[in-house]
Length: 254
Image 1 (tube, rainbow, N blue to C red):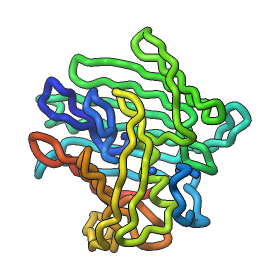
Image 2: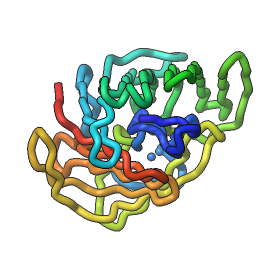
Image 3: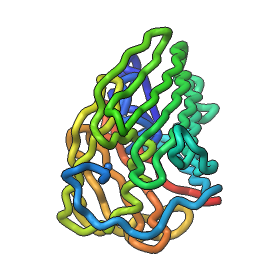
Image 4: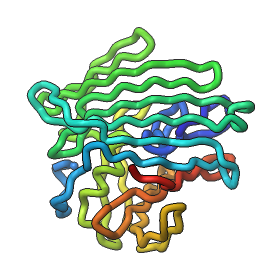
């Protein structure tokens, strides 16, 4: 979920999507995963075809919709990955003031949930950009192509983006007080973050009420609520900005 810097909003819409075209990519909002990470991974896995639909609000104003889907499994360089797609659009009313139509496709490793490839098509107001990122986790090298410019960077053993964080969190055996280390790709490069499982809250959504773990990353002001049931659904995502909070509430599961 992203709103551009020139619109005075620092961070981007959920999940899918931390960028600095608005950052905290899609908002809002982890592997080995990291060599320093030792939390138990659950036996569940993303369901192919699962589609999560979120109502996105800026404060109390309904600003748009985000649809996140586990499209299928694909192989890249002999590694099996989940193909996660995200499409974020503004409502007709909100588009009068600021229009957004963003697409993100992320291929995440089926075992570590680290990114192997990511494609972003950003359309925000008069701003348009396409990014392609390829990550060779085994060699520790990443390739980034953006607006005709290409660069190669060093990468850690596992890298996340905002789109893959909720899926990673769904696989963890979360416990209150648990600290989760993350290396996240942003427009400024790969940065290290830490999130804390702060509490078990009751979250009301259009679907139902959920008991959900509240996972907080304070540097980027990103909070994700993961349902404490077999679904492990990311039922709410919230990102703090300098003009208020951007919130995504799960309203439909297909």
